[in-house]
Image 1 (cartoon, rainbow, N blue to C red):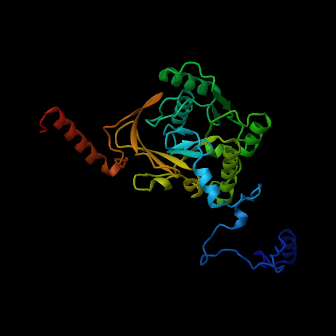
Image 2 (cartoon, rainbow, N blue to C red):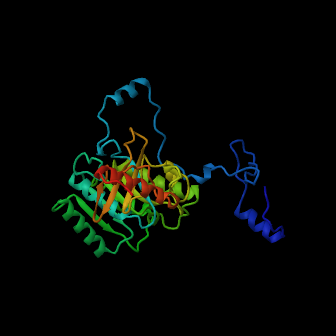
Image 3 (cartoon, rainbow, N blue to C red):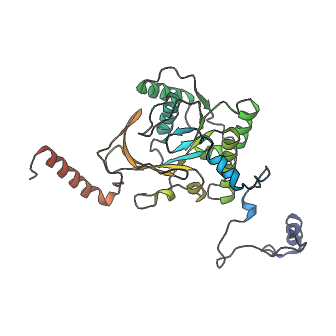
Length: 331
């Protein structure tokens, strides 16, 4: 047993009472597992909250083949998101993630495209908003729906949670207890970190707690869940897309689909890069911010991510291409 740094007797006794040795399966005390600079940290089983349901059965070949012949899960976004799956939408602070997510919720309820990705058919949407004052949220929803021509949407519901900062566990229990287990096809959580009150996003254990609750809710209700997450600080043009998010690396690897929104060289434009686990990943694309909606820009290269050191060269290349297309000769 490793003693606390202060080896005074009362400290040792208090620490020993609060931290009794954990017996192993053999009945012997376990050796101390504290990591040092020589033994880097590796997530321990205690970091991950215990499962609350029994393990699933092991499938034999007959069951695998039977499942393969059944219909696939109902898709929300073609080749990107289905019921029972999870998707994160990530971008820099103030990059317009809430506008993007509101566009997603309304497009999904209406059954139209989102950022150029196909919504398969109209679905029932719950938007959980932790950030906006409710008047501003209602105004944005009204403005977007008018622009998209959606009209009255009975299958879009809005949950104003600003100032609540409830843990996702409590929100999930409220929906289940209130008889809304099967009420929605898509739930949007904006943003993730406010549904994780008191948790440290840099802690693997803390992050896994809330991600497990989100996973359990999506599986128990057969609901697709989309949540917003923010980038870490700094320019992201040379960072792999899956590692641009802030906090624990669990964020980058847990969702079934990630949609990264990164500033493009062109003003008011974003490169949208999907990464999918369950299907072929759609090609990245560029969208222009035309509030309250977003316009696909097929004429722009998604690889031209904003970098201040390369901006001048990009502008020269762009202007030369425009001059060549118009027949003008640059001086």
